[in-house]
Length: 372
Image (cartoon, rainbow, N blue to C red; front, side):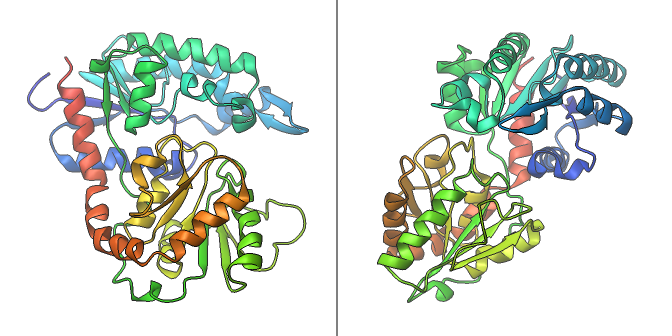
């Protein structure tokens, strides 16, 4: 590649491009441009509203008793995006293209930025329940993905866990895989201190739109155990879902905040004592890095990339399985560990500075530039 490479940036954008994939592509592209070491050129993809509506309508299916659309996984969507991306990349004349996820094979060198593969998902105990996709669709998407991997120049993995999975489960050469961790979404300002978390700690926080997949039901159940056996003053704030996701009203001690903008989420980190999200599938979990960047300890699950972010006894705790009593025990241990809170406060600024999109953008450019 030339000294200042021209890199195409390809993403299937949502109607509001900024919110696509939880702001990740929007921020990564900005970080790559801010690095100033490559010419970053947009090569799509923005579906016309009528085309998006038609694709959604053509692929409505009934899953688990409700209607869903599987248009993201359809051959028609693949064909449309593949043709559009090939034309756009050819017009741009880029030396390489970075795709967000596996959009399509291209005739020019291309790289993918991902946090999860179908191989990694199929290794889970119950992948169909996690994504609400039929086994036949999963198998078909896996074969398509492997074909795109084979032709790709490189894969940029969001975590070391996923990088290992690409080698061990998908059979990729280690030389083809590069780890590029993301930056923060909810802002880089760290907490001003840990005095607000000294003494009695009672305020738990859960954030996640996909309530069940991220273990929100387990946190609510664990809260009942904690209020009964540990401290009746312990409370839980739930943010993310549009509607209360469980039957009935929120139980005692639970405040349901609904969906919130990223600035409000940042303020929640500052006003709570512990972030709890024992996600059943969390390929990376940038929310943990965001909480830690503000001095807030975390409890997650000992799976996927969560152990890369959370070290028990240092900045939080990890659980295995779906036992709410075990989760309550870990939560109580962290709440009472002064050393954890001191360590999180000491590391907050360093965490915020490292998890920058400028760093992620430069790492992406470097990985692409090293591969002709």
